[in-house]
Figure 1 (cartoon, rainbow, N blue to C red):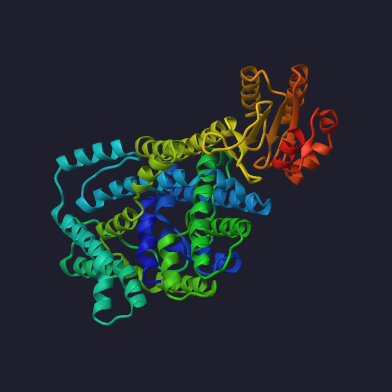
Figure 2 (figure 1 turned 90 degrees about the vertical axis):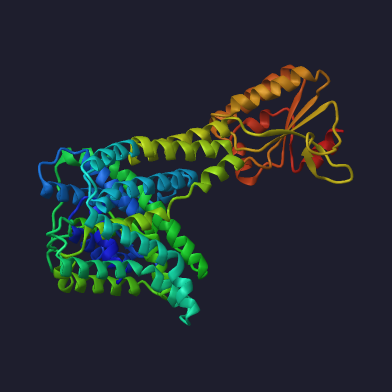
Length: 537
């Protein structure tokens, strides 16, 4: 709870909402997840990336006042919650798999940079705005023309230095003076609380508000009442796309954290039930004054390190946050916004990972293209454009790679029954037999490629009598691929060549047996490639 209160306030500010919205979003959703969730340590609430996406989605709407902005945030949470709930009830959690890791990594890195830049204005005490890096840099530059507010800079820079130092050095220092390693790690993670307490005292004693330092201001005490989202069709249509992206990004981030922590204790989670629980949490926050939430990395790790063994830990944390809304709100009115901005900057910079770009370049040019396009477009065009482009690039790259499957000409390793690529191994081949290993399922997008490859091989080897398709890596043959194989069998027959299959998997054979293809096949279906060669030589 000590860490969650300042973090919740900071993320509400990042989303452009009143500070209390961050606290409200950390109470009921956390309780709902404690009842419905399958992770024992996941902590649900506001997170940096979803807060940024919320601000980006709402800034495009023509909203008349701040109350309309708050209502739109509730509507966004409701929409994303309904989408998550529907996916969970229909057991469609696999859809999130289309958001590949390179896309997520590029998106989070770019979002962290945008978030950090957007908070510099609070640290410097200048006016700036924007959703992209060029916009932010331009407005920050113009804001500097009016001059940096030195008292604000002193608070913000001091908080930044403390938080950066504490993150890196406080834990080892405490450990050296005798504090247990686990406790030292937890204490270093709650260092923002020290920054909050110290700056509140300074603001109160030195009356920094009168000196021009922006403060959080009066925060209503007490629990949230029942709030109502906007149910008009126009606002729902305007927010549907943003809600879908927030739902998917939130689910992927939450499940990644939950699975990682569960694996460390040899536990497991149910992704489809996670969809239901996260959807319910977002629906709950829509009616209790919050905004979109998901499972957060930092708050969940602290929960894990503190020894949380059941979801009850999250429930108790929610109760403590609820108590804080009663007793701490008058004090938090003196909290400088520069402190909250410093908290956000330090939190998100830990998410920046340019190493994934270098790693993707070395391993796969296709994945490099996905991560780079997501990273660059998010920085230059905004978070929603970036993640949408990343998803599109990932799907296109997948379609391209599967439309040109790896097909190897194989031969038998002498003295064994193993078949390997003739380009990589010293193997035995036969001039009247062409053995092809297909390393991909056959479907409508890649059958033409396979046909062309076989026809070229037939044209180049006039002595061919048999073509064997080694199907050990083929998990499925769709209807288009079946028709392609039928046509291939007919054309090879006309050329005096017999088509054979080998090592066909059971489910694929079951599907073929429901057709006339096996009856019309000129060759045979062999149990193994070795038996096929024995039969034909």
